[in-house]
Image (tube, rainbow, N blue to C red; front, side, top):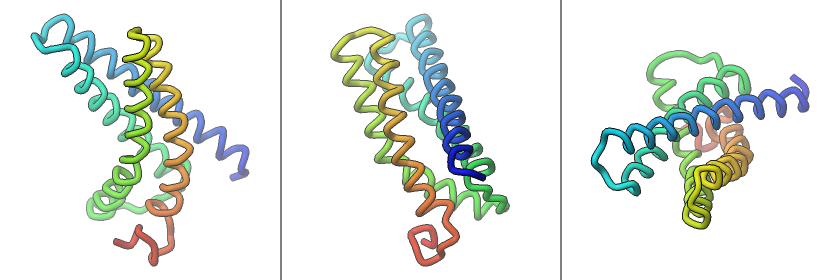
Length: 147
């Protein structure tokens, strides 16, 4: 696949995962506001976590098959690989959560919060692609991917 096609495909999948993330956040926040007697800050943390998990799982499936063309199977392999995928995502999640939260605290609106989320996810996905290529979906068994 050409470099341009890879960038286009990766961007498309990042947009889909971002939309899934933000949709799940909205659903959690709406449900919390309507039925759960919990403080808004706790609902926000729950929404961030649920949205992150939704985007993470979706993006893993896309990346494994259509970005890195990894067709390996088996529960052991998937467990190890998904664990590395999550590990590589920890630093990028901090960027995402920090940016989204900063925008929310600074401006106090849904639009600002989601703008911060999109910016944080965009930066995070660029970093994550490089980490995943090197450590998660690498055929180099001498790297971290062999742990």
